[in-house]
Length: 337
Ligand code: WQD
Image (cartoon, rainbow, N blue to C red; front, side, top):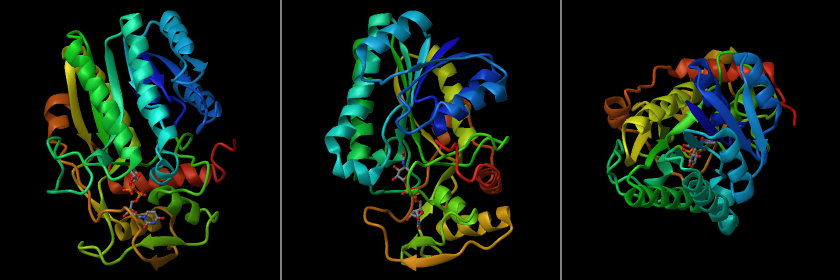
């Protein structure tokens, strides 16, 4: 099976390439390197000892999409390419809608022109917004609190309506919880281009000495230790969910959302303690007020993915922190773009 991976040089895309290649899928990457580097694909090639066709281009470029479709002739597309910073999305809403909504629209239109009917879409649990109950299942109301979340929900809508009109089309919508961790080799991992917004890469940079102290946002949430609870999922488990989703897309038409999480949640303090165990040193922390827009707790009901995709997360919290530390300590400056 031939799979086009947009955003394939990114954090999630690169781990997914390795899982696909291990199972002999033929892969092709389209990436504009706005938040990635070609070095990632060199490492994927040497780790897999396989072939990765790659095109440098933007998912909003119709001519480029037509070229990739004509030359690679994918049986399915995994669409990772997009923007993901919640704060930035409030400052640049039109940019976010252009890339995340316009980009998805352009990809699906190119698929239609080429007769490719299967897409796996990178969505986010952030589409749910403030929980009315936890764990979230896929029927939970969707009221995202950020432009970023709205852009993902709008793209989901486009894909859903496409499959209603095109009876041969299949759209598998994966709503990711909090992806963390790195490949077991320590050769690929998350490499934020700026100050990390997210907890795990921030802790990793404190542990390696690039930042002095982790700021814990809020200790007065209604949670056991007062800090925020999240459903962290190992990036390799998340990558494997895409392989499972491809199998599902072959067997089904229509659009269907799936939560991709472990169904467990950990607090900020749990993550700090686990990282301390992984790196053998205490992580310095300081307490600050809540971060604007944060919610107290998020947790997946991952039952649908288990039942229908036959997929389940297998990595533990220690797997997440140990692999992150292996990547960060071996690559203190990331891929050095
Ligand atoms: C986790 C917890 C913070 C940093 C965001 C997006 C979401 C998704 C993933 C997708 C929270 C606390 C964090 C720090 C801290 N993006 N924290 N100090 O907010 O659950 O989700 O990233 O593409 O859409 O909203 O993840 O890792 O930022 O935070 O105390 O320096 O860690 O308050 O409780 P979040 P996160």
